[in-house]
Length: 550
Image (tube, one colour):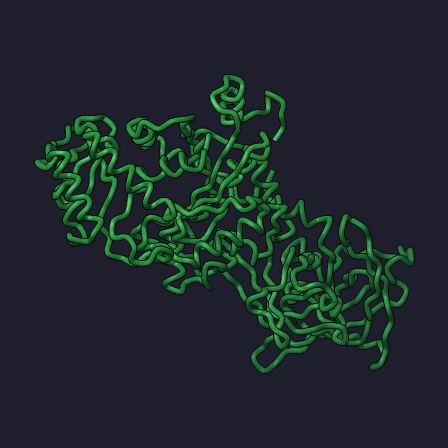
């Protein structure tokens, strides 16, 4: 981010003022994911805001796992989040923390609130608590257990911790205001009983704090100066501040500030929805290239540089924003256009026989390819009697303005010669299996031939210089944004197209497995590291060459 005032976002200005006014000595931010799913592009947006501000002001940044809900959390998600953040380039050093490590402190703070008369044990059921809470237009009712003595509340809460009571039979609630216009302040639950083994602490605890209570305490323990979160937590800020103030804490208190969530057009980032898709096996795991997870984007072929550029470009807004997905696609095109070497690949091949060439004819032609930093690499490819072209580059009944190969027509083979289709060979079902063509020796690319011109140039591969492969082309996973009622009803049946008979020139075999490459005319591709093997090459299309983003 720029340090010029006119380019500062609203959080930037707030932080700068806090530093100038002496409200904090050092910027300290954090990213607190719950380990109940994989990171996605929206997560990366949130991380980038906190991380970049800490970096800009020479502050500190923590990764803290908010793991106080044992029913949904696991080491699998912890490890994936750590891997993804490192891959994205967010360097937090050894500052990895776990909310579960603060269990004793958080518990003792609850004891403090009880002794202060600010928390009580309630026996109402979840349904009754919801009923007593009221609505946005009606006041809440006080729990009949609200006036228990401090001694009784302490005794009951300690017994909750020691496992005397069944799950759901009692909760600890903050004593605030049942008539508050903010529903979050109507005596919220701050502890509940959960008889579930925790992935880190095992069965050490059977009571667990609620997020709204634990989160400000965790921020305070770690010395967080600015607790940056999405705008959905704006109505939770009074409770965040209430907890910190009622605990009578010393030193500077963390300050919560909200920013607008970022959504991509046509893309679903809800962890609940993503989990349903994965568990139902509609997609190929959390790293399915159609998903907006970081694992999925990486497998699709997106680079961390492209994602970083995208995040830096969209800025920070106060309200939720929907960013056109074509902007993300634009970022990867910009990153790859100077990096990705170009190769010949034919996705849906049709065989071409050059009838006026000898059986063993081979001629090596020059071809140029981009390599790193936009340097040009020259190499040669063989031109032989047997070739492959794209099936869509030939049409027996061409529409108007069709500029590729037709029966009796000519087209240029890129870096090679003019060819003319003389005959079409079909199988017994009427499918075209071969084109018989002639080539004009005088029309070699670069020779200066100008006696006649052709409107179209197509790519091709020599049969002697290609390897079979599978190519996977992706589209949006949904036909429209889903809701909880129609998640599986609006799945796009054409979200993936698999070309099983594709061929790619052997030059691609010399490239690194994770190298992004440009298939001439077809887009940018990368080898699918999950599906490829020594026996089978599988390529994912990262993005098409043509951009719709402006």
